[in-house]
Each structure stands twice: as structure tokens, then as C-alpha cells.
Image 1 (cartoon, rainbow, N blue to C red):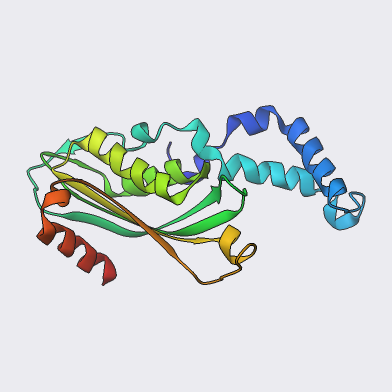
Image 2: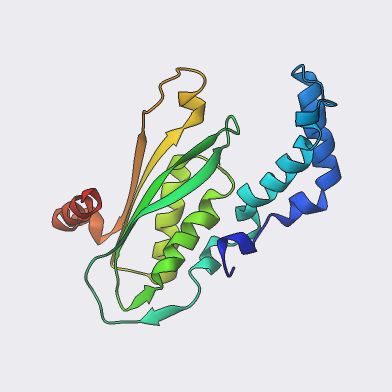
Length: 197
């Protein structure tokens, strides 16, 4: 996975004609005229979009962290404000926001850009915010075996803002705490303080 544009959902490409057919049928079923100029290419555009926004299915998030490095640094490392876009598995509506990852290494570190790639691999599939938060923390713990990991995810969900209760601007915040962060209140407080700056 060299770059964010370098990976796509190959299954979508393999089923391009079927997906385009079904998008066209959905457009008909909601009352649209699929022969109208603005909609002629919509099924193909939606299919191309699916290749990109669901690219996480073709990536093992554990592999994204790639090569790790031996390093004696045993102080807090934070990458914050990692922007993500995902799709709610309940309504297939977008949700988006920021991920903040902090960890205390125990001899191994990952390249900082790899943490952003991990977020991409986990979010580019049908998801719920709670699972994104846990998966990122669990993968960090599994691959890097740090002393502790803390992940905070902020999200704005269109299924809540644009439909249903219709509360635009409301944010959902989830967190996952692993290892030493569970017992060390000072480390948790330091992480939370630094991500607010």
C-alpha cells in the first residue's frame, strides 16, 4: 500500500456491470428518470466511488503499519487530527471526523505516516465509530506491543444530521484505552491535554 490512491476495492471492479445495473435500478425505484442527462453516468461514477471509499476491504490493517523500528523512546508519541471518512453500516451514509492516536513504545515504533494509513485501512469500509476506535487500538497493541495505547475518535454522522433526529453539528466521541493508559491517570490526562491543543 504505497499511497492512499494506490489501493482500490478490486471486488467492486470485478462486479462493475452488476453494481452499475443495481444503482440504475435504485434510481428508477426512487422515481428518477435514468435517461436524464445528469444521471446517465451516475451508475459508473457511483461504482468508481465505491472502489475508493470501500478500499479497506482489500487491505489487512495489520500490514499497513509495515516495517517497525527498534527505538529506546519510552515516552508518549501522538499523531492527532488524522482526518477520516467512512460509511455507516446501518444506513450507508457517510460519517467523518478526526482520529487521535497516542502510544507509549516499549522498544518498537512505527513510521508516523503509517498511523494515518492504519486509519484509512480501518475506515474505508462499512463501519461504526465504536468499532473503528477499538480496531485501531487493538491493531496498535498487537503489532507494536507498546506499554499503552489510547485512541480518541470524533465523528459527525450524516445518518444523524441529515435524517432521523436531524441534529447537524452534533459530534460523537469514542475512546479506546489499552495497557498502561488504563491504570496511569497522568498519562491519560497528558494525552487528552495534548490532543486539545
